[in-house]
Image (cartoon, rainbow, N blue to C red; front, side):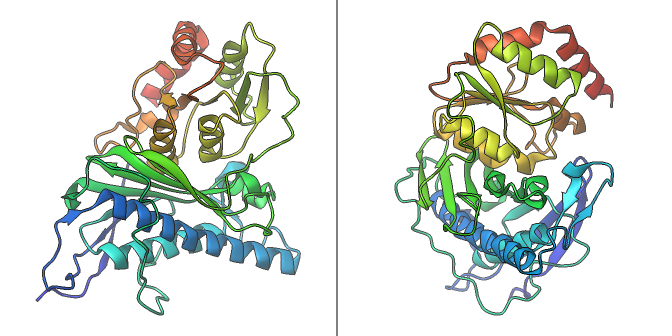
Length: 364
């Protein structure tokens, strides 16, 4: 007889994260399952993301009720607003991990962004979580019933934490990426505040790289309509004034009448690109594999492309990825983008400023 599941925290040194392994629970017939259906896993990730979104929305209601928008906010680096950590981050991750753990048991490897100091996978679980397995029947997968040991789920419970603290709520997302042999194959991007308020229920965009994509809940909306009257192409990026970003923006828009537009959160930028709300996005670094596992799968499912600045495949989710890969960033373009992906990365490769930056991060 198997012992009740337990949770262990192991250091994942490249990204300073929690590595959560949950021991196998018996299945209904008394035998532990060693296979998993990717389509059903994707469906349960949709459902779990909604539980995470519910926690984020709960925290926002509390912030509004007290009038204290800084309530529960701490900073990993007091000089960097991008390092904000809120009550919503921890609560959302706990809800998602608890739900997926109870549903799939031990063999499912889960890597989450937030480094909790105590066991959150079993804390405050009041009842058995039943996640729906039929929410994405429109997505056809070609790798169902795969070995559970080959699957890793990456969670960013609140992508756009800085935007959350600044009440730019439509930029916030919950990201759940599914990888097979550490290669992204499917993902969920849940938008807790589709119109930037609590008025609408969340939007969930999901997809599989070979099986298509779909939307659950509130239809997908633009996270920023302030740029509707600007000339295309539109390049979505943050507010970084790092020389490599200034150079990258100039190269991306060179020879056009296009504009750089401000979007927060890696997931938000990449989804806006995949949906055609903007033509491309560039970012020189990400926080970890949880930032890109879901967005990479979804933009590919929607016909777009995402690579490094020099055109190579992303390897940030790979188990043996060197620590500097998070500082190599990404370039993404949509299926019908006015910015040609190959030409853009070729021009970036030729830039001495870009090359110097990439050389430096390999040594850092």
